[in-house]
Length: 400
Ligand code: FDA
Image (tube, rainbow, N blue to C red; front, side, top):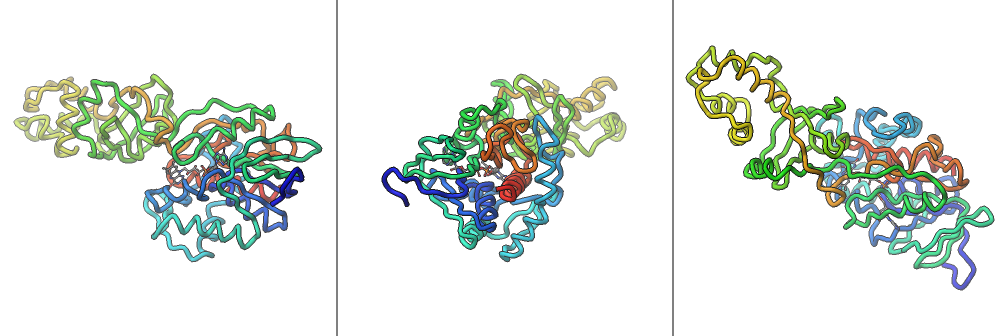
């Protein structure tokens, strides 16, 4: 390390030793560049370590651009097509990491997310990328076509600067607005950010009704007002609604909107309650719903809808049709989300109009790059966000 006033000269400084930064550092160092990867945390890849319940859902067999939200849906295409899920799977295979498909193409480590972090650390080490942890970045200046970084461990001068500091979700894991602040410092637009892949909180009356069934999950199709839908499980929680279907739709939800829940995704026939009445009208509505829904869900839902538990024969056609329709399109208005505290991702971020989709370099500030979650590209739940981190990190490294 350089002491005194003389800065240490490197080709590339990367800030953020998360998924994107580690991939980019290893690939850039493989090209023979001197690479220093800086992070204020005491451990690299902290989010990787806790991801996927400790098993890291590191990619998805079915990665495609329409699984990503961005003001410019085309932006992610180039990087995703040049470094694909198959490339990352090949890397995982090279390191002999055992993995499996859990559901919907989602690939998880058999053993531990540590396998993925160790793989990336070993790629960095073999290529000669240096990782400096516990390093706070105090100031970034640009002069004479170089980036000067004043840090808590010394002053660095780099010809290229890559920002890989992620989004705002999970501040307790070290998330900061650093990347957005640097973007603004250099005159780049940052689109408004909000929490994504996040549980919903419910209005007090709805919460009071459903908190007694917290921990119960149900297969659903959940639809946003804009018509985007996901067929996955919903989980009732103490605070509101969670589970994969809810996390997915939360990224498409706008404050104040309702979501539509189909509690019976496999009952397409609107007449089904009429048919049930025809079969045996003595059975109560609760008994019939309990055959197709978890009993406690049926009970709470009927209470919520203020439907009396009476025999089917006491309902007329119109009432049964309306109930069936309500079960298939139950509108509920969340009061909000649990926010960045529990969100898996941050929507919005550095405007893709400011960046080259091939290299991730700023169009107005030469030598400055943004990769991973700090960019306005957000994937669905299911390994899509890590794939964006790998692909954008790799694409950037090729251009350094
Ligand atoms: P990432 O957040 O990984 O890394 C940013 C790095 O920058 C961190 O090391 C941080 O310490 C550092 N940093 C931040 N500010 C700094 C500063 N001011 N100075 C220095 N360093 C700074 N995705 C997926 O595909 N599959 C999954 O299974 C999961 N699971 C999951 C679980 C949970 C609980 C969360 C919160 C998130 C997920 N995700 C996920 C999302 C995934 O973790 C996320 O999209 C990627 O980690 C983003 O990678 P980045 O490298 O962009 O940021």
